[in-house]
Amino acid sequence: MPEPITMSVLIPSRGRPEGLARTIGTMRSKESGAHTVRYIVGCDLDDPETISMSMDLWQKGWPVLPVVGPRGKSLGDLANKLAAKHPADVYVSMGDDIEVLTDKWDATIAEAWQAQPDGLWWWCCKNGATLAIVSDKWHAAAGRLYTDYFPFWYDDVWLIEVQRYATGRVGDRIDIWVADKGVASHRMRDLGFWDDFFWSRRDERKAEAARIAERLGWPPVADPDDLSLSRNPEFVPADIEAQQGDPRPATAEYLAAYNRAKMLMGDQQQAA
Image (tube, rainbow, N blue to C red):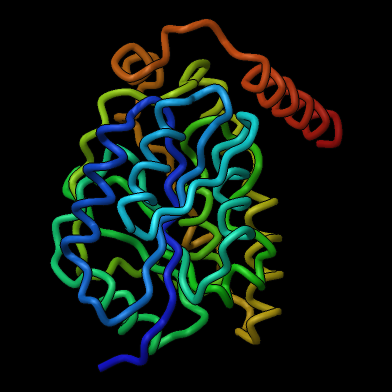
């Protein structure tokens, strides 16, 4: 039996109070009871329904801890703030439109942590969704969980490639399963641009991986390019945005993230 550890389940949530309650309730019902699991909910100030649901769950005696603040420009930055607010041995990424399917999922994570206390792992999902599980030692070596670039996804794919470059192998999926129930993504727009921006930052990911490996005392990877991800030819941004994009007007914080990314891409092109 692995030693008891503390886990912070990080759930940035917006506009889906019932989904949030369902996700947390299902996860709690499938805990082993052997570990301390806290559910850290990132709530935007302008989203009273999510704040209210989080407080209701806390008042019921559930280990739900809302973190309330102004809506930021980056999904990853919110996760970083949640982790900083509630440190743990392991940080478990989760969404408010995800269903956990595996009993004693926390015990399986604890076993993986026991085997490698500086590791990074991934949930399994039939549709290929990627949710990270990050040890505090990796978190400390990286200085963060995710970047502060992206208003919606891409931080998970960023971390997948960083892990490859740092470890010299494909990332570890452990035998705990989720079902992705999401049908839309908040703030998804300009997907073609964000895809190009992601692929333009590969050198940054290599440098980040090298720093993490050095701080963890791992040997440098001999041929990192062999581990690089490749663009999926079946990924058509316009089609995905048509299905899952956010039809509402762009928000101020989204535009701040977009303009920053455009500036970084322009600086990179001038330097090339």
